[in-house]
Length: 412
Image (tube, rainbow, N blue to C red):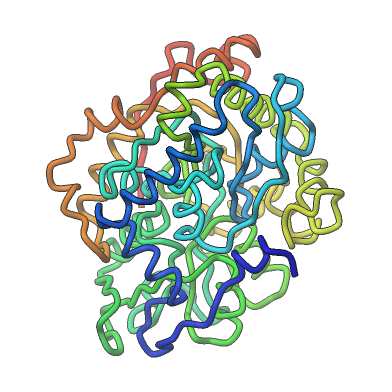
């Protein structure tokens, strides 16, 4: 096994009864990054790393999880779109958990990552690491998958459901669904949930299907293709899609360190342009994208078979869920996963408001004073994505409004 594989391989939690769902190593990383005393040395290490790699010839070093959220970064690498922009690339580095990818990013070991949109708020304002969202990676692409005997959200009362990270759109939307059905979410440090409670635990996405099959959880909400994998393997079923609750929401975004944006703006532009072009290509080449990302593809970017990925990318798959009643908002006319890069300010504002009413583990004091409008301006740098859209003919290339404005729609 190579060094990178050893570094990203999950370890068994030292306290299996704690219910945290994180490995011991991940838990320590997650906790440590939330304290300035530990984050500061990592920041200095990252700065030292960056000092030795000046200029626009710095290679693109991608960090990612094996989920479809990473598609634009991986497709850009596979189709040599970074090279077409005049950049050099290194082999993308696969991580198994969000805690690991954040730590590597803060330390400067990777310089282009996809990250859960709520987690970017935690990184910038919770750990005070200077980084910016430069583009969305995709829209929708997540779902609530449950055991075969679960028929409604209300049936989850008294059971355990997994989320991939406290700061995730998944945690936000799951809690909205639970609250709307008269259920109360509870987190770690509790015993068995009551009949009107649902215990939430954090699990790495790669562990969710096996946990559902082993009946240690009654369901999970996560990015694709782990919902499709449960369907293909007949261990679970999709109860709701995330995009059927929050229309065309972002999940993961492209995150760059502020030092790279400030010191290498042309590099940041080229990175963003390649990712936007990858999204544009993927929208019209779903099966080809599934093949590139699959375990049988040349790059072997993910461990997933083509049929599982194709189930996610298919443009016709969504209609079946509408007919069965899984999808309630038929008029929204969405794909199971779709791609567009523009980071709408209205989304970031609603995200901050939603997080403020979501139960979270750890120190989330920064949310109490975080103004939604300020976060939309400060967290996001949309200069590069606007240029990238112009390079493709403007917002209409992604069927976006010319003024790049929209109203958020959240309906449970």
